[in-house]
Length: 143
Image 1 (cartoon, rainbow, N blue to C red):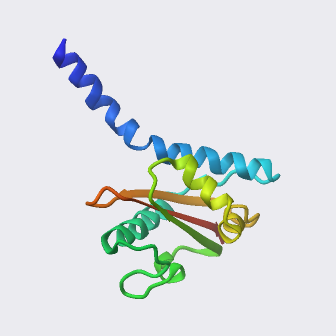
Image 2: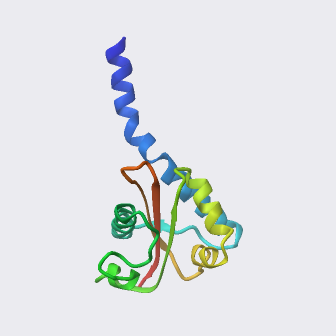
């Protein structure tokens, strides 16, 4: 019985690890649809870039739109072909729905989230060694 329970916990862990990110994506989609926009679609490369941004902020224990080398979002996007891009950062909560609410309550972050031009997103949450959660959302409109 213990072996079965352990197997179920291990099998469920990957889903649980991403539950808060999925809650954030659902809240983002709901907000965009309520505003008369289409939900953005996840993009693997943007998700990788968001993870790098969140990791950099977690490692430096800060919220900064520039990484430790001074690179901004445009530089971080590298060769990703985009015509519009934006990023939102957050820290302090693991609850994805709360993160989206914080962004929607902040006019500049709300404008990014509800930008009619963007169609793709990458979202990442990294937990720092001290237990603090760092979030990064990268939004883009590919060329």
